[in-house]
Amino acid sequence: MGSYREAYARSINDPDGFWRDAAGAIDWERSPERILDDTEAPIFRWFSDGTLKTCWNALDRHVGTRGDQLALIYDSPVTTVVRSYTYREMRDQVALFAGALRRIGVEAGDRVVIYMAMVPEAVVAMLACARIGAVHSVVFGGFGARELAARIDDARPKLIIASSCGIEAGKIVKYQSMLDSGCDEAAHVADRRIILQRPQAPFELRKGDLTWDDALDGAEPADCVPVRATDPLYILYTSGTTGRPKGVVRDNGGHAVALRWSMENIFGVRPGDVFWAASDVGWVVGHSYIVYAPLLTGATTILYEGKPVGTPDAGAFWRVAEEHRVSVLFTAPTAIRAIRREDPDGKLTAGRDLSDLRLLFLAGERLDTPTYTWAGDLLGIPVIDNWWQTETGWPIAASPRGLEDLPTRPGSPSVPMPGYRVRVVDAAGADVPPGQEGSIVIGLPLPPGCLPTLWGDDERFVRSYLSAFQGNYLTGDGGFVDADGYLYVLGRTDDVINVAGHRLSTGSMEEVLSAHPAVAECAVIGVSDPLKGQVPRGLVVAKAGMTADPAELVAFVRERIGAVAALRRVDVVTALPKTRSGKILRGTMRGIADGREEPVPSTIENPDVLDALRPILRRQT
Image (tube, rainbow, N blue to C red; front, side, top):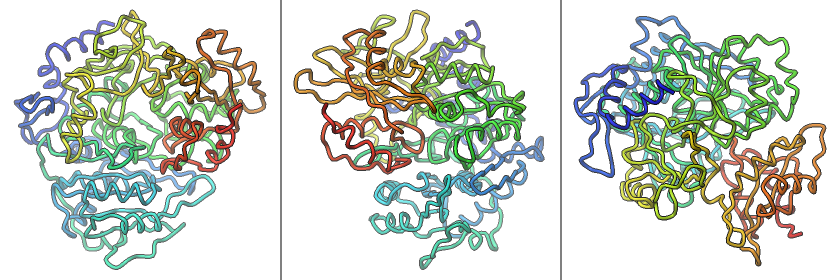
């Protein structure tokens, strides 16, 4: 672990020197002299006296050397459209739309809410905001009116940009009613709205609305505007919040430096490579690794409007990887589990030339060992678990393939990345021994690229993240570190249940259940019990063509964990409720099982799944 250990040690012992060198990969208008600014600790800033142009670094600077290389490939199986854009074409389209924004009064510092499907114009809109110094806030297309209104009121945008609809497997999601209701419900009123009309479900324009084409008509291209490194690039609201949402702020300087460093050193991606993050621009993965990191690196990025299964089948990912010569694929474990469930023998890879695919990265939810093993065996390439959050913007822990080919271990996202002082602590904040579970925290300062604060609310940032363990950022996840320094993330700390005084991790039980040969995917939740306080309940989806016996599954867990697991009930169900980003809605299921009237989350992918589960979850015996 020589190269990794050297890089990590330097990032901790000499952060100024480490990140000054990393900043050399970015073009600066004014190179920073002050690397870490701690004058307002515990709120830290990086490169505070530097100025730069994020859009220039993502597009313009590549035009001279790789202007005819593809910057973006749009692959949409739901519309049967594939379009490609060179760096020169992207620069020109972004510059023109930036000019359109400026013509209607958007200036540096103004906020712009983007509520769009996975279409190239969404990427253009994000980069156009960056080009003129405006702050974009992408709201996942299809979010409900209440959540949209809350984000509008918090960001107070001058402009809203929306597509008229999204398209999913077999259905069209019309955005009109949700956008109109969200705008009507919000106290803040944006000056204008720009609507990208999609032929599948056009908008009925309101007074003052512009179509995308109308906005471009007569616009003049805009040059990049330099901004301070500490100026906000975007606001991204954390999903699943209650009350006023938390607006995670991403600055320009630290963001550009961290993502550029991560692309080459963690993901092993070089200029000219084809990188595919199979996510959505509404989530942090889409911001970091569909839009910004690949373009800052000079790679080709793929924007995919489809699903891992059903568009048209479980071979969709392999078709995209072959056709576009994908070098590195990054997706969620849920996507691979869905593919495995539909095609357990991997027959749909037959005849596909995947020789360019050299790495598979998985993040977004805990990676179970069977999925990790299945994907590695099927593809014959390293499978790299990695762990991070909306708040951090790039991996906290991974196997850094550009630094060193560290061996991976099932169940572990490997080791902390440079700049992240990862610790596992007990309730008093003291470090626990290797192998002992505790709360995962990160010592301050967080490295560049992480949130410096919440939008408009420094006090809430400190209260929410920095107050539980003085001098540390609270990740909200629990886990342990082994004797070799490998981190194991067992899930959110609220997924640790207390059974008759014993603290048990539902993640550990899920790991065992998922190893059963009949199980495609599973969830374990803690539900209230009058005698023991809480008891675990398992929900399992069987593999296609197989039968899962609940009694056998209970015995399987007890055999491997022991009677202390206290798991006595497993229900076999047809599907688990998930968000559109693939996260299982454990908290919602837990609330229903405890008898609460849980609202249907706005992020849910299929509400029918939750409706089908309600009577099962409420069944007491």
